[in-house]
Image (tube, rainbow, N blue to C red; front, side, top):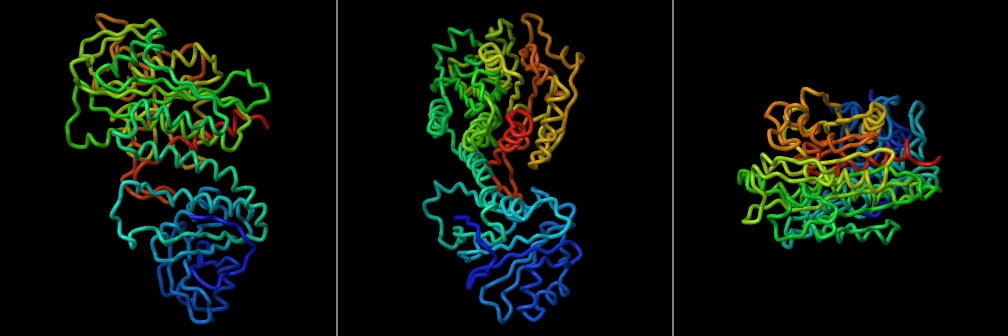
Amino acid sequence: MKITFAKPQPPNGGAVVVGVLEGKVLTPSAASLDAQSGGALIRAIAASRFDGKRDQILALLAPAGLKFSRVLLIGLGKPETVDSLAAQGFGGTLVAQLGSSGEVQAWVAVDVVEGLKLSAAEFAANVAQGARLRSYEFDKYQTKRKSEDKPSLKKLVVATEDSAAAKAAFAPLDQIADGVFLARDLVSEPANIIHPESLADEAKKLAAIGVEVEVLGEKQMKKLGMGALLGVGQGSARESQLVVMRWNGAKDRNAAPLALVGKGVTFDSGGISLKPGQGMEEMKWDMAGAGAVIGAMRALAGRKAAANVVGIVGLVENMPSSTAQRPGDVVTSMSGQTIEVINTDAEGRLVLADALTYTQQRFKPKAVIDLATLTGAIIISLGHEYAGLFASDDDLATRITAAGKAVGEKVWRMPMGEAYDKEIKSEIADMKNVGGREGGSITAAQFLKRFVEDVAWAHLDIAGMAWSKKDKPTCPKGATAFGVRLLDRLVADHYEEK
């Protein structure tokens, strides 16, 4: 779908989209259309339950006298609540309604309305980003899809008086959407297409936009002593990889970076501790943490963020075989700490343990954030509404929470403490890789904390947020790319040179 910006001038065909404020208050463009239609819009609203609440919809065939095919009224909510997320939801809602309607073109009016938190240009740019995010599809393997099931909407014109400013404001948002789409693509791919080597190859493509990419293979990781990560992948015919991505956008390219670390288990069978067969196909997205880090690096480099950021992803495939690690095995991590592997399906924390150590020892970052589809326990705790946030630093936790709220990627801080840490005490090694059933996401975070040195650290357990089984305003069901926009916003707000 092509998105353009233009001065207000209703088209001669296609669909027209206008906003209505809560309380059935027409925006200027909606009022103008109503006048042209002889009051038809007001009469339609009066005859419906449409009140202008956020994301409410009233779709109408164009009244007589108007030169286009249909009118879509979308609720904006109260003026004081119309922020960037509301604008993005507006854009996503119009695409959800019109995308497969048969319409080829839509024209959306963005007005200056008293009381809004955004300028018309900012509102227009966010409408465009919301529309683009909602337009995502992963259909590359659907070879017999009927034409009537394919999206029809090819062009969206966002109309506002200051169209040049809107276009300029949209440019970085468009780059962020590119990062989101990259992450969604990677997470959506089946495991026979995306495996450690091929995912590393996808990350290498970021070199085209200025990201320095380095890939470590098993021989290099063995020399570094990464026994925890390598143990996870030893049952697979696919070679494990560690990918290092560097974006040096700050004036001082040698300044300490922010470090992003992602779990990249490209398929998780559970290993010898085999998962149940039902639903195992979903484990292709156990690399969503790595996907989010790769997508975030794409977004930051695409918009030329003035910050130094390093992204590290540990890529493995967890398979059962004669060479797979067994429950009861003891592995030695890069940090020198030993781990008793009680359950081979608690593998992501082993991958992150070595990735965290490598990141800290090599880059001496100012802060470290890891993302992982780490535990089913976090879904029991928070459902599919919030990611779990665990942190050693209150300021970092506050920043991440605020960034997530700003972009609609919500996190909820979870407790940590010595009592939970005792649950992973081992009788024969420095620690075991799982505790009991109770507080499973917390004991997993306590495990990771043992590999964090003197640096601000946060862990995001995104197991409940990486994949959605229902459509959302700016995200169709499927891979969400949760974390890409959060990390980009965090960098923009706190780590980027002003």
